[in-house]
Length: 280
Image (cartoon, rainbow, N blue to C red; front, side):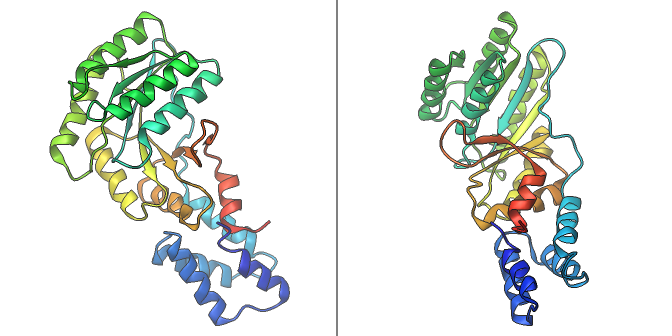
């Protein structure tokens, strides 16, 4: 990413031209920060002495991030239930598998509900992961009733006193009301047998401004509590993280940066911003 690195280099050389500022503005907009936010950041930079710009920009970016807690929910008794939602193609099922792996590495017991019954590949993917790391994966028939899978998984999680129940759901467009209604039904089933403690929305970092619309729509339907940002692979598109938090006040809790199980980290705002501005 390193959106500001060129400007900082120019400042150390003693001069920044109008063309340089225009180039920075274009870079910020291309990174999905939006025109208004980009202009505000440039105004901040221009108002500072050269020695103060990096700190001022970092403060401005930090203030754009939400102050909401980023820690994953953990209830004191019974399984902590995490509902994972998102549109097709964002890396939802892969993120469920990675979260399963991360929690197991932390010593937690996990049950996974393969409730994306519309994709046989999603069920098979989670079953393979479950076998690999020793995690029960509750699945039903292809194109079966996802609510039934969720009910059985919740029962299993209680039976073995699991620390976490993670529910994968079918990918759906935020504009498809019938599918969003089905997602609400799954939540109601879970709430009949326990609580829904987290609703994590998967957002593709390359989605751009549409990620904000998705976050608002899913929050309205199922009460999103946090985000997992996927495909944050070092491209300039990573700026969308700031915009989504600034616009929705939803905290990014995890980021996915690759295909491997270990390419999944707790979101670190300070490291993210330092990498974004390239001030080091």
